[in-house]
Image (tube, rainbow, N blue to C red; front, top):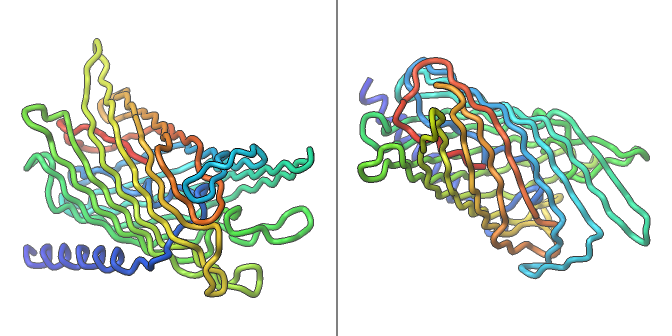
Length: 333
């Protein structure tokens, strides 16, 4: 059993390295307003037999038009993505767990031209993620936590919605991507000094996207691959008989250009750096309410694109079973 554990750990680590190493020079995202799947997958480690669940609402508002790193404020374009996310995780034993993330998406795009407004709204079931996680170190036992995960993104959402004229909408307005993707995930956390409630964390998420082979009926579409890096610190504070957990995180995201029928698509891809000042309220022994605003610090996009102006997530977490009492929850987008 010990030998099998080390073999599995090696395989997951190798897979993560391979996926991260295959990001092409122009890999990126469906657009800055896409559904936040890969950034939300993954729970902290829990004891054997623990079921963790979280329901959250995610709002991504885009009204900043940029060319490269320069802002072009014409006020004629707005984009809103609202996502309902359901995340669940079950710890099969102390070193292996399964996580899943499901989504429902509402999107709206508004363009103003010569006092005329063109508005498009879409909604529907989004894609999902399944992930196998291996807990290499436990916070409760060592004061550090190391997890590695890998799994598929499932194309559950539709990618063929049409407008009022029956014309198929572009890929960035579809609730699903139409492709099978691979997600790799790594998480490290460490208690700081003599204060066990204060935890610093580092998280890396890689996404290797597949191809939608039925885009607009006769073409193919590939969202660019992406990598995200989160670094954060959080603590638990007592106010009266209430426990609050403030945290501060920085998110770096790199994504390259999409491809349509094998050709690089202009006005896609880029780099983003955001700051996330979050607050969690422990409403019960196993329940947490969290609020996470996300504020842009820097972005450089490929070509000319709308980029996020503000983002907000509100969620409720609950676990069924034993939890590690000495850990600080650091919620990140």
